[in-house]
Length: 73
Length: 203
Image 1 (cartoon, each protein chain N blue to C red):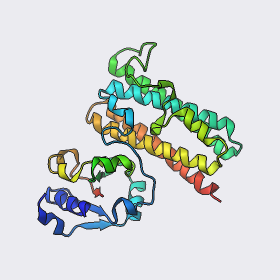
Image 2 (image 1 turned 90 degrees about the horizontal axis):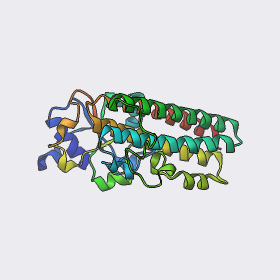
Image 3 (image 1 turned 180 degrees about the vertical axis):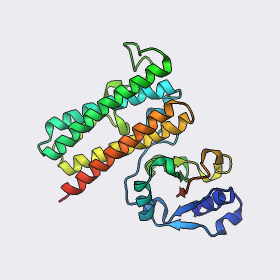
Image 4 (image 1 turned 90 degrees about the vertical axis):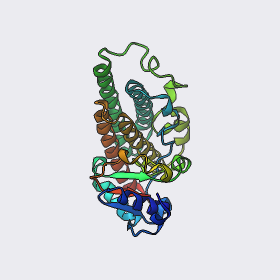
């Protein structure tokens, strides 16, 4: 991840929309990624989220299915 | 900020549609699950192989069944008692599903010492889903309102849903992963039924 990634436009969803999306879909239909630190994840995370801290993201891309929509927080 | 950067990284890596959740976890009004990434729950780190995960899941299901069973008899509200009775039945079926899976995987029925023969967990008779302790949970519910009890059960199911998805991911393409996918789907359904009843019972 480069510094410029912080400035790229990305799509965002309000939490309510994420909640509705997760309720409607089954877990096979999306990637849900918690990019915070393992400690933050441990203290509380969205049910079903997988923990991939930002710093590990590029090495662990294969854990995500690139054909599915992905929600990150 | 981190999630926007992460989203940009993922899009750059070729993922189809990536959405960053506005406001991060603080904006999330739903329930959260607790536990370490490698854990799902504290003692999950002890389980690495598929048969160990099965043994641990069986143990947790057994504890939850006991918890729900006591509640089903103790709660006066008939809707809430009924749902907990059904949940106790569902957890009992999950135990059978897990035993079947174990047989398929190992090629033999588990020995009499199961699940302690496969996995060593302290106070093995007292653990349940959500990393809670059955005795403490039963102590806690005394004198609590039905909505408080429902909230605890919702938290319990949230954590088991989360745990099973973690187990499924750890098993990747192994055949056992499918069973954990099915179990997580059922825990999600329990979660929805408990939440619906909770909404109904809220004053």
